[in-house]
Image 1 (cartoon, rainbow, N blue to C red):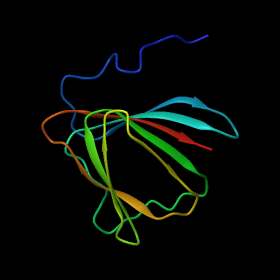
Image 2 (tube, rainbow, N blue to C red):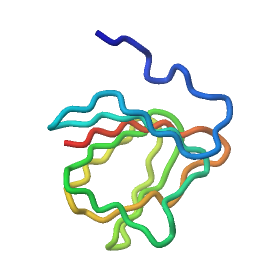
Image 3 (cartoon, rainbow, N blue to C red):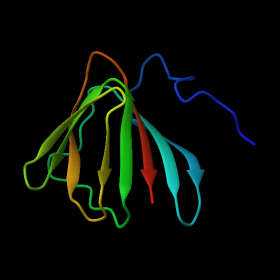
Length: 105
């Protein structure tokens, strides 16, 4: 059994965006991501073979989709992204850490 607080052990400063697998099985992956001013590469889109449910627990971010739809996320906002829906992180708040909970299923 693992026990922890999702917002504990956040580093004081981060260079690269941090990805931490919390649970991984053949059918689901739960991860924590910590961003601060990070974005997706200009030329790249996420195009994942599985659905992704993502929630911002702390901070702010903007997701952009290939059809130019943008979704602004703040603490406790979430979105369910169907498989193969091309998207990217357009913006994360450079003044505070953005903590994401992502469930790939």
